Length: 94
Image 1 (cartoon, rainbow, N blue to C red):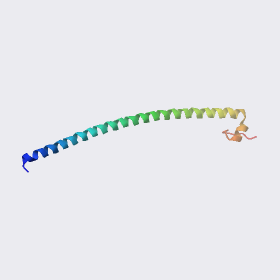
Image 2: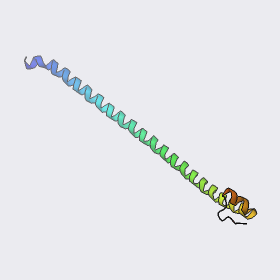
Image 3: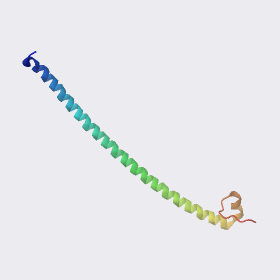
Image 4: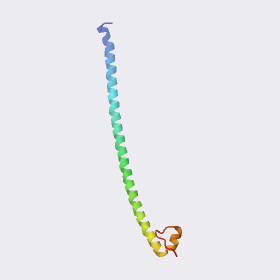
C-alpha cells in the first residue's frame, strides 16, 4: 500500500480519533458540572441539617431548663409524692 492509498484510511482514523477526543472532553466537562452541582446540593443540605440540629439543641436546652423549674415547683408543693415517683432530686423522708 502506498502513501497515496493510505491517505483515506489515515484521514478516517484521524477523524475517529478527533471525534473520540471531542466526545471524551464533552463527557469530562459534563461530568465535572454534574459533580459540582451535586456537591453544591449536598453542601446546602448539610447547612440546612446543621441549622435544624442547632434549633433542636436549643429547644432541648429550653425544655430541660423548664423541666428543672417544674420539678422544683412540684417538689415545693408536695415533695413526698414526687419522691414516690422518683422525680424529686432531694426527696424528703417522712
